[in-house]
Amino acid sequence: MAEQQITLTDLDPNQLQEVKKQLDEELDHLTSSYAQLKQAQAKFRGCVNDVDELKSAVKDREVLVPLLSSLYVPGKLGDTSHVIVDVGTGYYVRKTRDEAKKHYSDKAAFVQKNLDTLQTTIERKQENVQSVVQVLQMKLQEGGKAAATTEG
Image (cartoon, rainbow, N blue to C red; front, side, top):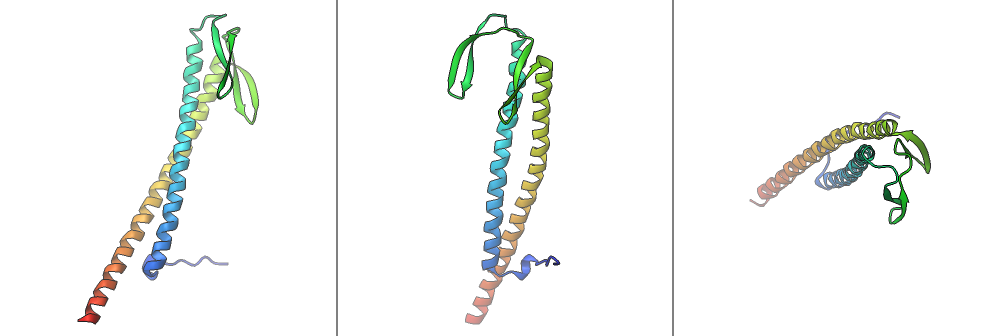
């Protein structure tokens, strides 16, 4: 089935309002996704910094170990040359500090590529919204002029 293209100028003001509403909803969703990706990227970068800080840590230093997001238990650093890395879906892997830094740096870079793609998509949607608004304003002005000429 062939896709049919419709130009914005073929739509009436009510249809244009619906198109704008749909584009606004898509834009809200994309913007929310962008913010979530930014948070994930900051978390990965934070992990790189945390691994860097471990270098200067002294063996047997007392630390708080997170078991849950709000539950920490006291512990002592044992092996400071290796860390446990959360690789997703509940799996953890023992890695050297350099391997862990590379893992988190690669994750941050991957998220950045997605952010760049998403930014381009958001900009395109914003341009689409602007086009719809311009056509809608033009249609409303034409409608106002037509109403004024029929009254006079």
